Image 1 (tube, protein in one colour):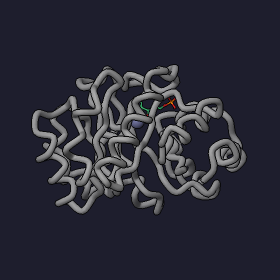
Image 2 (image 1 turned 180 degrees about the horizontal axis):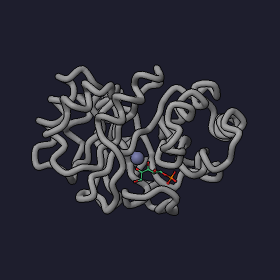
Image 3 (image 1 turned 90 degrees about the vertical axis):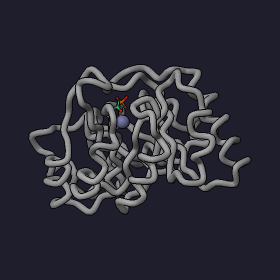
Length: 217
Ligand code: DX5
Ligand code: ZN
């Protein structure tokens, strides 16, 4: 299990310190929530802030783009220092093309599905995707409650990936806590995003150990 803390819950005035605290806590991924105020009702940050963070850390940047028509900005996010770029299936009519352009930019391609979006949206793309993100809250805000049917969605996606013989990772994002993380990993989750449940309980090394203790990794 890889834990990818969502910086949405950290102190934006101290991003460099927060990133180095994550590294010191043995974290390897950072989940960067990019919101445009249109695809989701909230606005966060974009490529300039990611480029500034990139200069301070070697953490793997897992960039979750909650923006309309993400194909317009793939090169900018890649140049800013993204390692993985995750776009929403609901945000473009040309998902295959956008995923191909992410791979072309040198980043790992991933697709996110809102809670109500069926898994069929990614079935034929699995061989070319590094990861599928199962949203377990409606995107836009941290601190929301996990939507229970998403656990079944993770199980079904795991079976779909196995049947396709693909190596696609499953990420779960939204309402992940110490209480549900073991169940999610048992259902097939490889990468867990945690914002409020991770950052609101410092010290971070201990919190990381608690997650590892519950679900391994
Ligand atoms: C929600 C974001 C999540 C969020 C997770 O739109 O994509 O990454 O910050 O926060 P928690 O863990 O608090 O649900
Ligand atoms: Zn996210």
